[in-house]
Image (cartoon, rainbow, N blue to C red):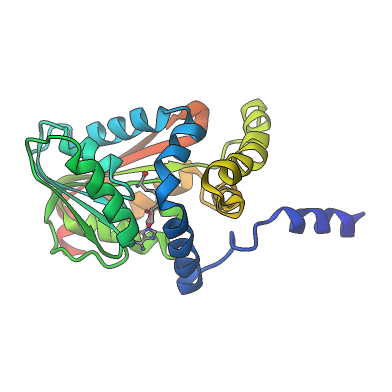
Amino acid sequence: MICSTTARRNRQTHPMAELKGTEKQRYVADLFARISGRYDLMNDLMTLGMHRGWKRKTAAVAAQGLNGPAIDVSSGTGDLALALAGRPEIHRTVGLDLLPEMVVKANEKIQGRGFATPITMVTGDALSLPFGDNSFVCATAGFSLRNMPDVEKALAEMVRVVHPGGRVAILELTPMPKGVRSLLFRPLFHGVVPIIGKLVAGNRSAYSYLPQSVDHFMDADGLAELLKGLGLSGVQYRRLGFGTVALHWGEKSAANLDR
Ligand SMILES: C[S@@+](CC[C@H](N)C(=O)[O-])C[C@H]1O[C@@H](n2cnc3c(N)ncnc32)[C@H](O)[C@@H]1O
């Protein structure tokens, strides 16, 4: 009985969901390069378009009451960077992603819309941001921390480039607490999403990895603790998307100058 339960669990675990370090980074880069062309369409289908509102909320929470430049880390096709650029508080926006394929897509999107303030998309690694300390008033990351080979390092980099009094905001899928909602959403995530991934993006494996990567990610309280441990103050979060998504934010205090 124990053996068959273990075998069943093993069958359900995506072979890549437990990868770490450079192996994970290589897998993630290959995955997103393959699906970059259908990435936006998949997001719209999987969330019924709700991801756009979540990204606007993230930009609002990040920028509120501040004044100056912003960075969106692992920006993908640039939705969050565009949401930041649309905020009256933000004068200049940088979107950074590891993959040139994503930067190309983001630039196509930016060119199609008129923005009063400049947006620059750059390739770069979230684990080693090519910017000096205290360069931005706020930093955001959407649906990317799960994919990082070193989550703490990625967050520490976001904190580093934000100036004291500035804000870090994280939008991320989050493991759901056990309960009725989780019973409803689990089959959707693990069963339906990979099928849509196969039909629309031609890549079932990438969209089997997605729910598995959520299962392997820390819960919302754990992420809040990590942010506090990195020196952010006033850390809070709210759940979105029926509890499937968490939006965390916190402020960099003056004490962070010594970090
Ligand atoms: C799920 S997508 C999220 C894209 C976008 N933020 C959004 O909300 O739609 C994850 C993105 O993280 C990027 N990424 C993964 N590892 C990265 C790293 N080490 N540095 C920068 N970007 C990275 C991928 O290329 C991909 O575009």
